[in-house]
Image (cartoon, rainbow, N blue to C red; front, side):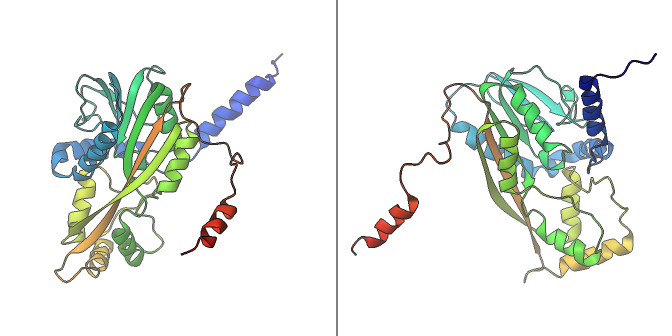
Length: 296
């Protein structure tokens, strides 16, 4: 006689089904392939990731402590370094992962509570499960360890997106972006303490859309959507014309890149805590009224 599954077993089966049926917007195999191709001439197109690493280094400089065990998620060419630290590097591309760990940033496996610092530059915007990736990063940290991340989000590629909508309406050729407010919410959702999200905007001027496309391909950041469609020559010509129509007086087109920076801490006893909602002892309305009543 067949055994009837218990409530716990039925619950586990339902959870497993939910995981396996969750739709993914990015093609994991294509992402690995694009990163392998980008590795061949990475230095020529890595200027945005270099800026992200500079921003991470600036934020790290304000943390007065030593970091001995570091995890680098999406390590690319391994440009991130920290004197005196042992760095574990993980990347989804086999070429970048040579001498490192080959894994997706939302599917890696490391011992919990084993790192003082986790950094991630330039990859979270193309990860299928961003909350999952951040949760794994938080679990990898020792109590009071630090996470520092950076990725393209916000209104990045606004000029190209406008040209795509004009030239090829109704077709998804650019993936959705995470804005700075949503990024902060994701840190909270992943269980980080003292979460901070901020954004820095970089403008790059291109002579044509082909220069921009070349940089995106060189970064491994071209279209990775599961339901992407091949780009035909006539469509590309329309996109080129729509992009060129936005040129300034010297014939160049400004493109926007918003770099979203994330900072979070693994929870630990003794950390500063935000004030409990409703715990204020003074009325904001009364304070503002008092200010208005002050003599000139």
